[in-house]
Image (tube, rainbow, N blue to C red; front, side):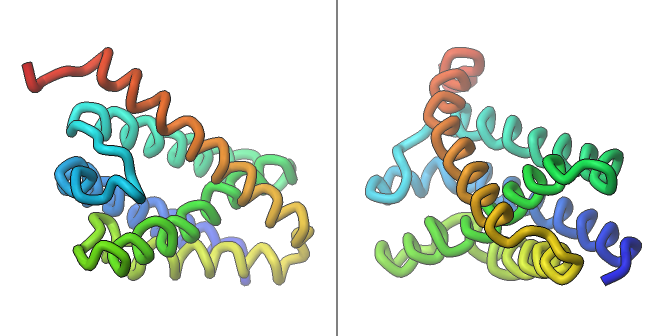
Length: 166
């Protein structure tokens, strides 16, 4: 896959990732009250704060990838870890939660039609260009764990910094 095509796919992925986060920001806080097994109950303020931070992280990682990715394998791996995390996010929690709860999981449509296909194509582009597969898998697992772990703290910080409900 040539660099121009891959860069175009990165931009499309960023667009899909943003739409996904907007979809979640609108409907996930209310949904979280029914999905305690998959997602702790959060207020709109908490979730919107966290999703803004995660969205900024996605944009910063994409910018770093565009600026330095050709010269820096670590940036490639962190970026691909993030992209891979968003692909995994399609299955868990979105698809599994929707099946288990029998209720639409906010973010599922954008995850299935945007995040999963574009993250898969981007990662495949790097695999065929020779990126180390083990390093790629480890980066996806590491970034996923870091983001998942940080969400709890982002929700707490969001509830302290933003409270439009009062």
